[in-house]
Image 1: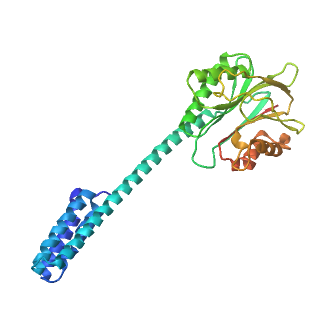
Image 2: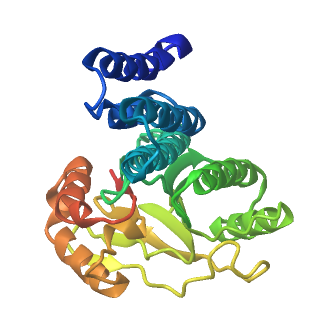
Image 3: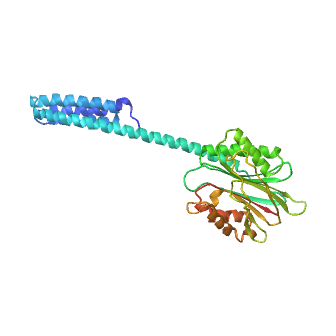
Length: 355
């Protein structure tokens, strides 16, 4: 707690008065003058370096005057006594300056931490506001999960989305913006908004939407890398559900068959958004049968400090073995429970099952 200026000066003034009073009351030859060193020491605890230096100089003068008064001479003993007070005063000033410097550093760090926390809180609020619930359709059930990184107070650019488009299909999206800061969260919001807008006007399937989004990001000068998988699902006139997807540098989707088989949809992967503007993008297609489950996820689920992507994909397939009979909520929670705990990155999961 800061002291009023008058109260702060009262302590060293009182110390100075006490030294002078004690010297005069106790009489000569008591060596009290050397106690003047407590004056700058007291000032250093309540005042700044400049004021401490002033009180230090005053203590040296008082020590010299009282020493001359007590001893009646200006000999070597007096010089030693006054020198000791001067050294003590200098030490008090140095200690005061060091303490103030440390206090300023602590205050700056506290302010920076508070500012960083505020930015992270805002970014996290923004991120979570964009993770809306996907639609539940008569022919398709969905489930989603999001878990922030367990290592460090980071805000990432992972997100999922699901929405209808004019051709009657539903787009399922999983994406990851490189970085863990407010910039990545802002890029995520910008990319998501543009994707939704372009998907309503661009025909031709997921690859065409991703190509248009890549051009738009490049036109805006966006330099962040974004991996994304976009899948379009809709009832197939021939039966089942038609799936078309395009992959922009993202981990491969997983198909959990109604028969229990688990397959990575490892088709050729196109470059991430922002890596090679104008690069050609390809759609892939297959038909889903009733009970089939499509799983989209971000790399935080399969990568860790001890496992790279390929090894993580093997573990993911093993973890999904036998999950065809589980509900989508059980599938998602089981994955986060088994794989998400080791995540060093954010994890987003979107699962969709043909009813």
